[in-house]
Image (tube, rainbow, N blue to C red; front, side):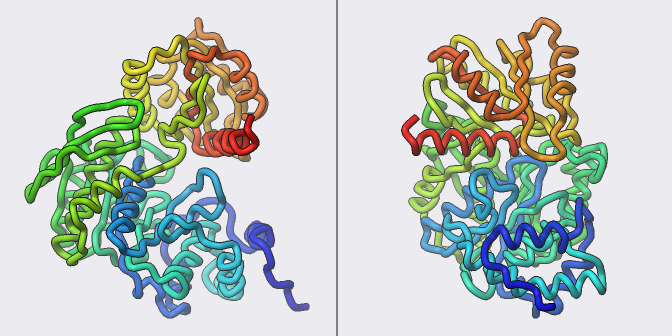
Length: 447
């Protein structure tokens, strides 16, 4: 009996529950098998491949925005999405239309079923990756594609491309059960995206991680550009609207750059993005005027990364979900509180069960006057009571409240917090996505 054709995105998602393998299955065998049968669409595209523990999405957004301002049609593949399902695949900031998504999924379904018989089912992320490659190469045809790795790098499904530049934003401890329990081991996975002769830009700061990346670059005869050694950025001024910074490298200096994103870590991400763009100018003849860079950087928006999403009380969102991200967030919040006279800080938390809860809580709890623990609407969310126990264990004097859902937690906090207070929603990008969606809906409805 013939299968019914996909008509809506829901048809595709429902099929993926059975047609795709569950869980994370690192390896490139399935991807290489599929791309061979598809005629290697990835070979038609010019990629900037980005891996790293944190900051991949922000860095990708900055690069893509500058390229767009310079007049280059630019595709972007990122994960996870924050607001809308199709944000993962976009061209010039426009997410893939549902009609295109459904059409390419329909064309890939027979291949996925053949894969199941020959080499095993694709994972959902592999299916998304294949769909993105087909869409970019055979329909949208952007000039550049900013290509974000999912997990790790070496065995990630995105690591089937030969990029113009390889980017490793930074290296920290996350997904240690899959990638390793030291920065050096994790760097080995991230550095797996380095290709022979392709220049590498990295914001890594851990000495062991840098050593691994340097070794891999040398083996591949790839020029390596390191933050603090070959390029740098400094904050000139911070305020409610973002940050003003100066960037420099071995070639030149750019001053008085405006970055709407908050936090010192975003300045480092900006430095990585700007160095990458300079390499595109020098080695690949990309026409990027200084004004394109200024306008692109100042127009960069990346939802859910230290984003102020509501006022009175001010609600800030940040998807910090590992130790390094939580530490960076804590530093940024301290800076924000120096420029804002917030009376109290209310922390709204959810964490996935596979994360190191204590490492996330340690830098954040000292900032809070109260904590609301909840859970994101995903199967691997840490139960509310377990998260509450962890908070009480680490901060016995803390006022801890519990909410069974993000919606309930947000409603209560907005009622209880004063107009001069700060609510910080963090610990999980899934939680941030839920809360942001609710806040945006409220704004649209005039609440």
